[in-house]
Image 1 (tube, rainbow, N blue to C red):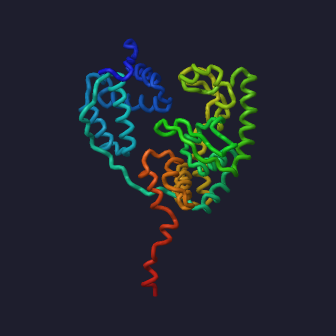
Image 2: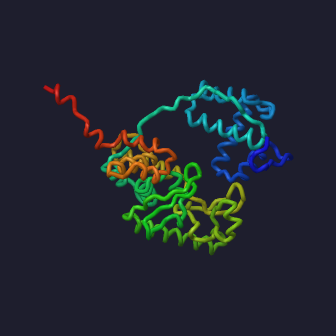
Image 3: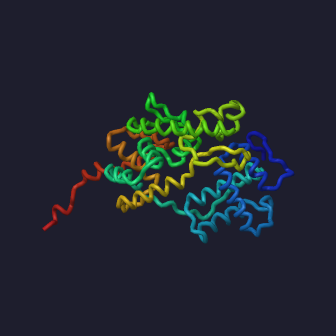
Length: 331
C-alpha cells in the first residue's frame, strides 16, 4: 500500500526512528510526535515487547484499544488518541491497512460547559497579575484555546484593525478573532519588553525562534525577525530536541494553568475553573450580547455549528426567562 506521496522511511533505521522520521516528514508537532511514540511503545509492550507490529494486525489493535477502556478506564478522547497513533503507524510507516476495527468504545460524557459570570471573571482577574493575567485576559477577550494563546507570534496581533490571527489552530486551520481594545496598551508594553529580550539574545549570538521546516527553508532569515518571535517567550533559552539548536521557545502552558486554578481558589469560586473555562465564558457571553451564532462559530474556529450550539444551553438570559414553579407552591 502506497501513501499519497510515496514517502517511505529509511529501512536501515529502527522502528521508532522510522516513526519519528515519517512524523517529521509530515510536519507533525513535537508534542504529537512524543504522544504517538508513547502509544506505539505501549502497544508493543502490551504484546510482550518483542513482537514487531508488522507481525500483528487489526485484531491486535482492536484488543489493545478495548483493553484501554475495559481495564484502563480511559476516556473516549484518550482511546481515540491511541487509535490515531496506531493508524499512523500502520498506514504511514508500515503500509499495512487496518480495516474493520471495532473496539469497545469509551462512552463520551455529554456535560454542559462550565461558564463564569462576568462578576466571577472580574474576581478571578483580581487574583492574578503579570504575564499570566495578560494571557488570561487574552483567552477570555478573544476566545482562544490555551495553546493558541501560548503559541501566538508578535505578527499575529493587528493593533490597527483590532484583530488577532490564529495560525494553525485545532485541525490545522487559521482564523481571525477579535483583539479587545482595552488590553492593547498592556500588550504593546509587554511586546516592548519581549523586543528588548530578543535584542539581548541577538547580541549574545542567538535570537532564533522555531519555524516550520518549509518556512525556515523559504525564509532563512525569518527566525531572527521580531515578528516571528513568540508573544509569550520562555524566561530561558533551551535546546531544541529535534535540531539541537539553542532557541527561546514559548512559555510552558502549566504555568498559566496553575495560576488560573490558584486564582479561582483565592477568589472563592467553587466551580471547576481552568483556562478553557475562560473560552467557554467568552462564547456564552458573546451569545448573551446578541452575537450571531454563525459569527461566533467563526470566532471560535468550530468546524460544525452544532459544537457552538452547546453554549445556548447555558445562556443566563434563557434560563432566567423560565418560570419559577416554587412561586405556585411557596407558603
